[in-house]
Image (cartoon, rainbow, N blue to C red; front, side, top):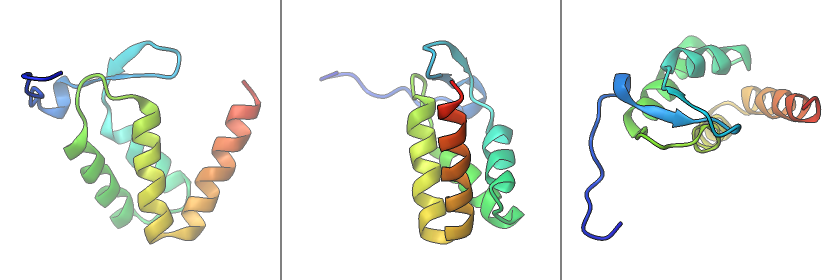
Length: 95
């Protein structure tokens, strides 16, 4: 990637790669909803969503997004983080 610059794109045009290797358009509402479902309040959900939205780039994986969300939850709301991890563990074991 030497000599190439990362193309800056608005999040509306950003494509992310899912774990099944398919690409889909980045949707910040999915992050907000998931974080709230984990038990975070709306303010934290909005903060995390904006942070992730600002750092996305085409080709970013949903795993990278998930890891970023986890880190913020771990720092700011341990209950929501634990709920997030429990859901993730249950979801992965059902695959």
